[in-house]
Length: 465
Image 1 (cartoon, helix red, strand yellow):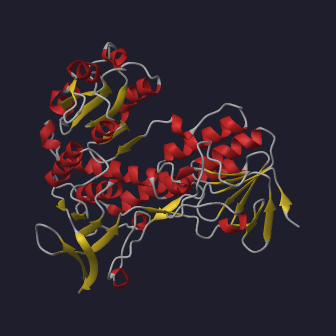
Image 2: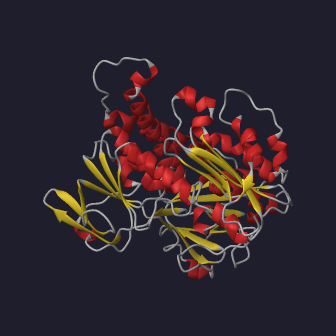
Image 3: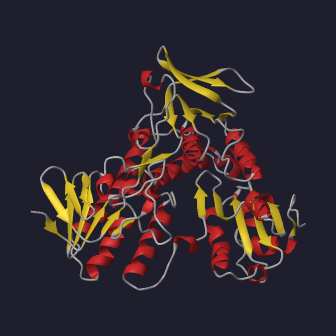
């Protein structure tokens, strides 16, 4: 006989535990199922461990620049990768244990460990011995690194962002296939630890979803640190070459292969939906395996919702948490919240970081609306000069007629924090003049944003300019 619950949550990523807490406090009997490590990607192989390692890499980089700040260090800076990994493991482990303890001590909540699979729209098996049933089922199963169909890949060892978390040594030469967010963060990180790094990108530039000026500036930043960048790399293949790995390329420039000691694949993510038995419940998926949901995260089957990365509506911890908030608001608070209400916002955690919100220049031009844009280099930000971190720029695009801010890109020190001041004004749907007339604290990065907004000009290439 199945064990009855009011709700079943499959997966313990960012959205799942918080939803379990809200449902249990509302008096519902909740089952939470997790087949791997509690906490999901963010806690175990994503944000928490990687940003911990980014911090170690930044410390190493800053130590090498000690002379720039009038400091003298005896001897070269040496990175102890075992200690770097131990620090990362300690911080990530503490976060995971905290989430697990929260779930295990949560009233009205039972944590099951094992693989979940639908038997019907209201029945879920866990392993081979347990059957659960509930009128409400929430899928929070996340994604995993995508392994491409790359010739020769079955003949070489390779790493993903997940398996790289177990590395406690310094790869002499790390080859990275993929010149987007994951590839760039790991590339700069391991270059600062002391590895030689080559980033291989199939497209004509890094970060192709960003504006070209952002992509070019980031390429300059990583190349300045000694990272090799190979663009327009088509027909990528892998082969063992003695003790090394050769990645074959067809590039417009440069030699036709890159040879290194270790290979990292950073080419996107795949949803963990293949073994859920979604067909048994009749839950629809798109051609990539993502669960199809509406604007309030309902699937096509009444009583089943999908949260987090597996629904294809976002690929971040913050979008997953916002998914929880949307479902809780609609289900428990009778407050109609929608996915379409949110403004796309994210950060790239290289150094300096990129803080992004709203539309790119290209997306603004595609709307056909007349727009204004302002841009300033970080060399004109006093705080950046004082910190000795002047790479990058800040840019804002606004609607000429409504005066609402359409998009912002802050590539520079503190950009991942300063962007939120602009984002809040965007959510308020307030005119940019509200921010333009604000008095900000000196010396900060944020203080230049009001000044930046005093220098708006027609967006180049804008048909309405």
